[in-house]
Length: 253
Image (tube, rainbow, N blue to C red; front, side, top):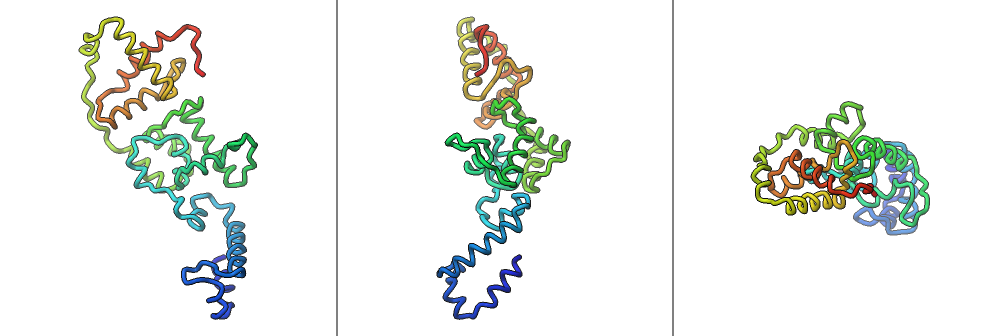
């Protein structure tokens, strides 16, 4: 394809080429703009069936994932995992482009690439957030699962996940819940666990009816990032106590 374009441009007389394109290669005439538009259509038709991480560099390289930046994050959201896994930045317009309905409520017609990405996202969602509770997969769990199901991902993303999964966790200072307990009387402790579970439900999508939840691990990661030594075991304990104070007829929204 590139050779065909070069040959066609080579046929243009030098003076016509100067009148058609500026020093930086931008078209400066109607003919030049028509040529660029046609070349782009031909390239998109030729490469449209390729996976996104192959075709993206041909058009908008600024959309490529900055893995060095994302490697510094404590965790990744579901959509960040989805788009980084194909080597693209998780931009809002990408996320919106594969939804069933647009922001106006109109059903979207997906092309081959967006259909692929929609299916790709659903595979990841069913594994790590089946109930749409905004769970955030751990790097170690991601690494194991990617290898387990032989999921096709961008090499840069695979390297990021494998590196973070292998990184030794910080040595945490053990919690001392018994000493903490002695500082609270019954009413204060009840208020505290109610506050904890309310915040976890509202901010982290915690569902007390689930047999196993990743929310305690998420909160542990947040606390660790803030320099607060708190284990998921202790967090789970307080969430369980707070859940027992919920009304009997309470149901997740």
